[in-house]
Length: 171
Image (cartoon, rainbow, N blue to C red; front, side):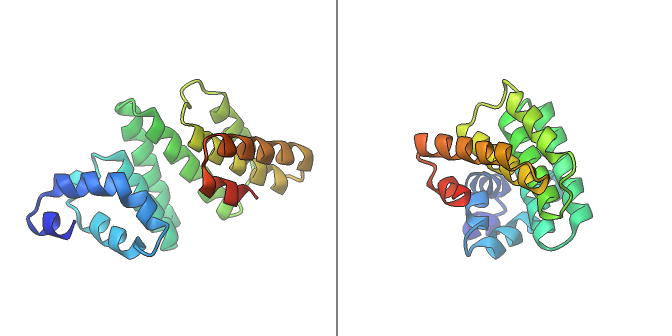
């Protein structure tokens, strides 16, 4: 990626970050992704819902929550315009996770239920992640039986598709 960046081949850098950035951000390469995402020209960032979502996540982890919310809103808007429903749902998931992490649980469970009813949510990994977050949100509401059902549904999907990371998170 460094060589592409030095050559100002920003499209190649964008493709690499879009493909690997999210995975790298959960490993020891967070600072690397942060550097490249933040130093790409604005016109590259502003046309990619994935890069905008990643910038939102970077802002969230840097405790700049208002900035994170702005990036997530832009990411969702562009993804909708592009009819990129997978990215719309990824961004919604990230927004709702942020709310849970910030202690703003009110209404999150209902929002997740609405997403889960959507016929456009086809990605099983993302569905498992939403179900796990539903379990968390319901737990905060002290609705333990439905929370357990949501966790078990997440676990069932995760096992079926061999989504080991989510299995670890659910258990």
